[in-house]
Image (cartoon, rainbow, N blue to C red):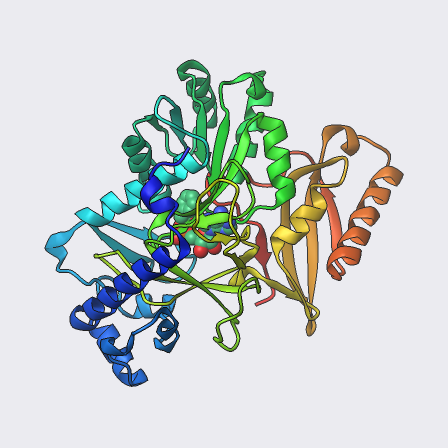
Length: 432
Ligand code: DLL
């Protein structure tokens, strides 16, 4: 099923001519209304009239998260505040949050893209959508909510937390679709087991999980534990919120990015050079329909690759490969680059290990050391020391063989790693 047949299956040439038209309008508009862009185009020696083809996008300067911080809170808005009907902000661990504003039309666009995303994930009118993304400044809750209403489904605005109640509601209200972070879905499965609820017997058929990196092995774990199809959804508040891209249930292979609203590019994060199709690098997104805060060539810091190969679902929009993580979260351990999600995929393939882990980076003299803390199941935990030692050397060896990183493995008691109701904290970096 496709929500918006007209736009989701446009032939590539039609997508590109629409993109060019919308890009030209966006560049004109930000040049006229946002002093930051006027100045950055001037410095780059570019005028809106120079954008004659899609390739000319590469002439435009990037926009960085720092530019949003420097223009805090409303400096990058392209419309007067009277036209802004909603404000969200991304958490960020340090300093001020990044602030985004939506006009009435932006909210409608967002709902449309989330409705498309729900349908791509296999949801439809008549579904009971249990929305456990947080409501608030975070875009997850309200973004999914408006999309679910637009779809015509029955949405339960749970927000995060209060896990026992979540389970009771899912059971009693017959929830068929679960939306939350992948890590929270596993936490819910764990609480269900403690409460004697067989979560596999609930009516859930699809889970729409995103807002944090997760691996293919974690997907299998979730699908098995919750007895549903787990679909990957991507988004970021700067660009929209959830619904920038989503996997289709037919292929579960790459996230369709809605190209009639966004132009994706992949760049080499070190040089800024645009990479050829299929190469892995940093995702850069230009918004071409947003009114409140249009962004030109926004550097997401997210690492992925882009494919324009046709998809079996019939949608023609390009696909992003499952995101490996943010370049900021990439660990460099004694010269080896590694993403937490790569370590995750090793861990979750090992018998006796639970899907809860944390990575601790310490500095030892001039060298960084990595400790992998991972929970083992009750049965393994009560095994003899020898068994546990064998398990930790197996993990150490597999991480070394597959990723080339030497680490210290610490097996910890079941349920000793802090659970998260939103984005999981996977890395504790004490090396700075
Ligand atoms: O996390 C929006 C969202 C809400 C997406 C609900 C999906 C579902 P921010 O808080 O601004 O917005 O965080 C955005 O989260 O740049 C990625 O690094 C990461 N991220 C989001 N989705 C995925 C995903 C929301 N599916 C940042 N896989 C992004 C990997 C993801 N990372």
